[in-house]
Image (cartoon, one colour):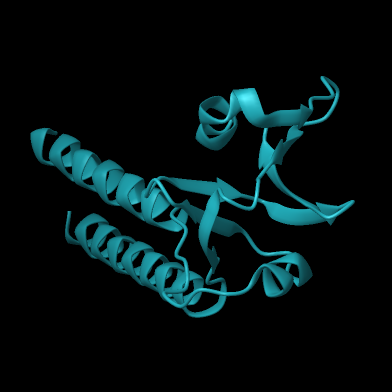
Length: 140
């Protein structure tokens, strides 16, 4: 019985790690122009001239001004609360003004390779745990 409990703890730990890895976001190393960032629907990371980093769902340009769209409860929205322009309580997003002297670098979220690697690694780990459990159950 004691061995089963330790196996369950190991399984819980591995599953937790897999879930945590799948929730991380990877961004491209190269910077992109504002125009390129406006054309994408991927996540966007903005680095400021103060070397602070903020994550946005997307960027928009309206009347010549740049805005970042962030989730209402995100760290970005909490840190930039004084720059929020549109705060509709029924929406889960807020619109944040990003002046020209604010944005230093823009990086796009890397969706393809990183997500595939993490997903396949997670599936491989789960398959391995399943095989170990089946072997353990058949051995008893």
